[in-house]
Length: 202
Image (cartoon, rainbow, N blue to C red; front, side, top):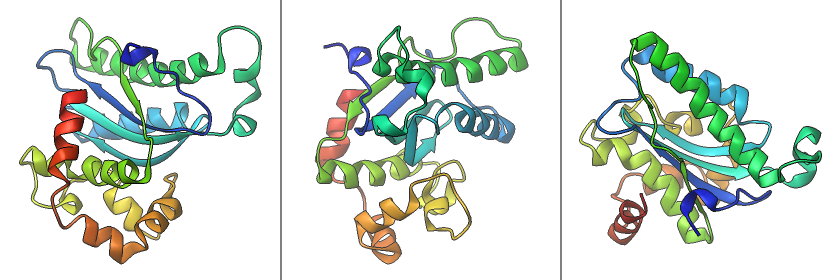
């Protein structure tokens, strides 16, 4: 099964990845990052809970859980394409909406993103913990910062904050065993085998 054909099923956790087309960047300034998050808040919360994210200059990592079917909007359950296809379209519409605004702002031509965003089910607890760690480690791996807290375009600090958030903060912190354990897990490099597996995937 091609990656873009993997269904986004209700109640399942996924690693969502998208990348700029070629050597382009997706974000040129702070306003671009904020605009993407604004579009994300418009398109995704009705269909998925967000556990972690990281926006990098040329790519995006998301960890989400598709909402259970009884929590999905009724419009997704009407006749026509499958629920999975409609959920996938939500993500596609997010990337399209951002791309259209960015292309207009930058007065450029062509596609901003690769043709199809990638998705991979999170199949066990080990993958769950490693993925959250990996998502926040991205800026360090790319030598932009030396600690996840220094990168302003990820969920790391929001997960540690007491301020209201759309993130599934309680679920994430509880999985790690609390705030201190979450912090301790992020003080070390992610497992090399996991890094290799993810890099081969995308």
